[in-house]
Length: 365
Image 1 (cartoon, one colour):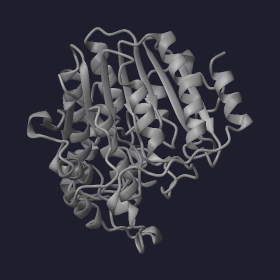
Image 2 (tube, rainbow, N blue to C red):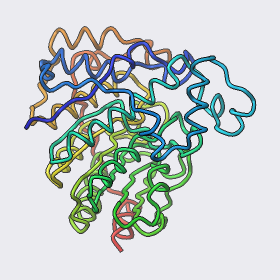
Image 3 (tube, helix red, strand yellow):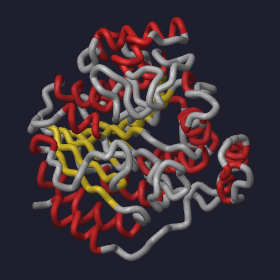
Image 4 (spheres, one colour):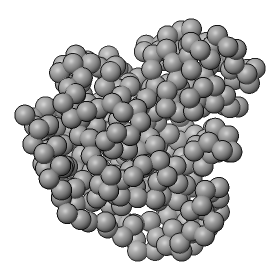
């Protein structure tokens, strides 16, 4: 059975506000780009449903979910809800789809867990909101769809689920949700010292978490070293029945919210290496705040999942999608031509620094 792609039109024209990092289009652009490349026939596309409140309350508190619904209905937030649930605070704004959009992201991941019950691969680029807490918004994340998807797998009877997170920011909400649960192994590669400033190398999250904090300038060679020297050995030792990969694109060099220097080749290599580790695989998006780097990376993820060789040049239709993007940061004023005409970045190799070697050695202890 070919991989399935889960998307939704709710992401089109939905933003967190013009000055927010999530003002940029992402999921709609990836969907359009994959179609324009000829990679996304209708028979493998599934529309993400909205999750029900009962489904998301498997992890989230009912009062918090009700507060999100109120915020969308009124487009305001009262002082009590702001203080209690961090809605409208700390980068988590009230915006027109504040309830429906995260409920759709959660619904897409829950659908992915259902579709992979007997095995298979599902790509859900709208998912990956890994900072969400049971009773509050955190880090631009209102619900935690990775947690909900993993819980759905556990409810199906699985007892060895691996979560791998290559976002520039630590997957704190997922680690904490499964702290002390031997059924779930969480592995997070993230920038050291970057918000939320958790995920230290020695943090085992109750026993079954492995954190790989990396320094600024983290390059493709160093990701390859950690992939083969730490991530894959951890996975093979755990022998998961299912793998959930959060493929945040904010570790790419062009992203404004990190100081890491990966090319999208590094992300695609991780996807390729994890494709056949377990019978079940869900891949989601996550962070990523440059519309061109996110779209090109995540479209290539879909190509890798399908065993498609990414061509040297985009199709004219795909080029038109990329030329149609707008970005209100400095990088958007004069974007380089290859952001329009190619999907694959030039590789960014480099020296594997002693700190990276030490991370790999310690995480395997």
